[in-house]
Image 1 (cartoon, rainbow, N blue to C red):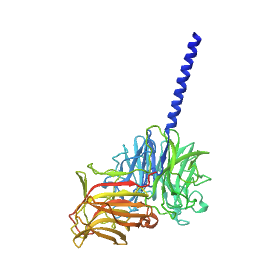
Image 2: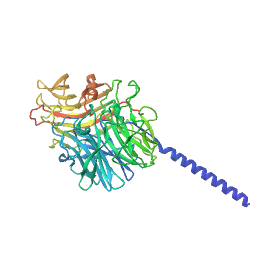
Image 3: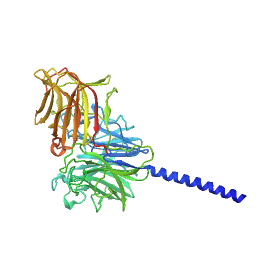
Image 4: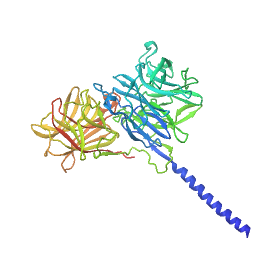
Length: 559
């Protein structure tokens, strides 16, 4: 009888153990998920990342857009939520007179002993600065300028021995370049109490990873301390198709640094331009260890819609695994190309992974604008308001062709194939007054879908920027002088522009408009296309107001 009871006990124990083991295996399996690249869609270049108490924080360049430097938070490196903007007060960031691709370049974020540090460059302004905050959501301090840094892309490093340093891109030795693009990486010791540099600068990298090849634009440096080494990682080759990431290491923070023999550790420049779904221009990276002991690299990349390298969505943020090989960090693309999807282990089973199927709608039910919205340069006066679910924008003389702050509130184009729509109430009283939707790349490259007047009658117009003037592409009379719906549809290399009066159906204003006109390859610069709600009186004083009921974007290429 005892034997029977014992066997029964063993049988029950084994059944329970196997069931629990199976459940645990299933649970572990469920934690392996897949995320989609880019992890930040649209114009979010130059990512920098840090980890604090298991959470991750990431920032990006914003150039001449305000607020400056969005800050995102994630608990898993996949699902990112914008929690604020670092430079969100006009006294922090003066962008007056700057062209769109000047301004805020390459912020770098760190955390040290209870304080967040961010260093950055204001190109066209007072150059390099540091701001600090106790909380990443802000408020962040006003800039502390660092005039000794003669270059761009500063980054802080906190050594385990208690000292701090700042590295940055700088001029060639004695400011005597041997060729175009000859730059160096310099280092200063940095005093955290005074937020000033100490002593003199020292060159730690001259030219780049392979000096004999005359590498150009060594920039965007970061220092890491792992495996008994100091690693210095930097971008190289310029920010276009030749972009890359290289790495060096040393036993001393000030060098000498040895270049990894198989540099670059990240690039797509050697691949066939005719490959399917290409990602180009990869570089300007940062690396981080997750909460499971795995390493990841975030970097900028571009998604062309043709084999000639045209893209309108700007430089976006991508992420791939990083593996350590012989004590060197290597971007593990799992092949030659940056893939749409990679696997990642997530701590929370219910976590939804980021995908490119993200849509957005703002019905303006809050008293303030969401963090996503941007202004062109710094608004010095309050020319907009939100009341009863309506966004009201004053019609002002300033234009997007100028170098001031126009009545423009923008949202990044995030989809190669997608649309943006809004409902506008606007009653122009002169032909100078216009309001509507703009697809804006820079001062000389934009399309403007707007309501205006012609011969004292309301019309819908499509305008194209042309040098210092506007070209009328098409104009149609409107039957009603009431609210009107506007839509821009992106289809890779073309845009379509539509409108609808009242409750009527959509009417096509103009199809197959050349989107390449707004691509970086044609327009130049470092930004991406912004869809904006925009009203102007073209240099003439106006008392008018444009009213927007809602604004919506939709991805038309859901995967």
